[in-house]
Image (cartoon, rainbow, N blue to C red; front, side, top):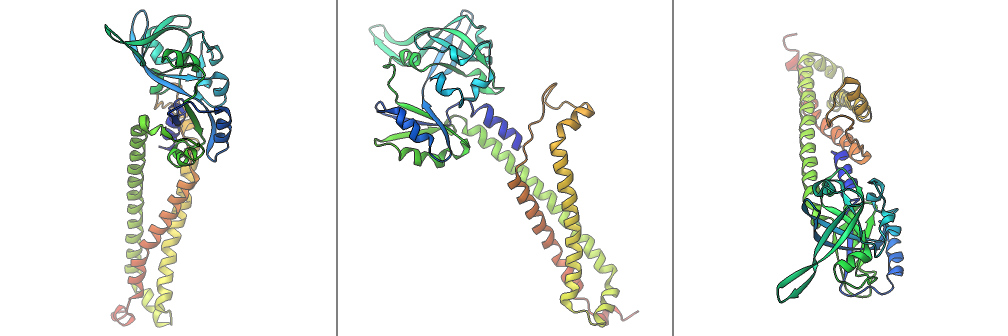
Length: 360
């Protein structure tokens, strides 16, 4: 589950704005503002941004896309999409050339290749005429395609920032949006108030949860259900400890009675059975964690050796081990198993020597 969440975070949140600042008027001296925001804790970088929902039309098909306007020289080290481009690169996005880079799935739907021209129609630059509203449109040349291995391949496209402004009938060079890259996109809501405080004029923020929050919410629910299931498995193991110790108490009742007649106190008897149960729990925990961690790190190697392909040929299961979660598992298991030893220990401590040895 951690591996799945990590893959989604990289393949989706690495291609879309993680946190976007919106200003009602052009941001004065945005270069200094970008430098200031980049120094905030949790912020990796900031760049100018503009986006619009558009229809893209080729000679054979039509589709919908979210168009992002970027400055390639500023996005190279921040945007994950730049590392997954083929048949071109982001350096080809030059102002005034009207070039576009499409997601691989979107390019397949449109049946286009690098060098082909497509028509982009934006609803943000609508002009009202006597014949009705006319959307802004431009012809763009496809210069590359990217593939992130997720749903963004069929919905995203990138153009130069100035070309996007011309498409939307805005003044090129005026910056009203800044997109921020975070070291952990899940902290977007925590970073947003600090970002807003850096501006002298009122601004608003949006983050990735507005568009992809439902997807990651579903993954979080799956993780919670998986945690519940594993907790129930541990609870069953704890009940096994209870039953084993109770049987031991029944079997050793006479021995406990003899020891108590020789001076063993009630707390001493409880301590014996608590230690016995805890030793079983600790040995099981150590062996279970060791085997589990080894299997986790070698899961793909084992499946390849056995000839098992879960995700298809050439694809590996995403594996990500988080120390904090492993710590919670260990602590929770210890607490649950220690609690399971209390009842058998109390039962053993309450053995009455006279009653237990009456028929001996």
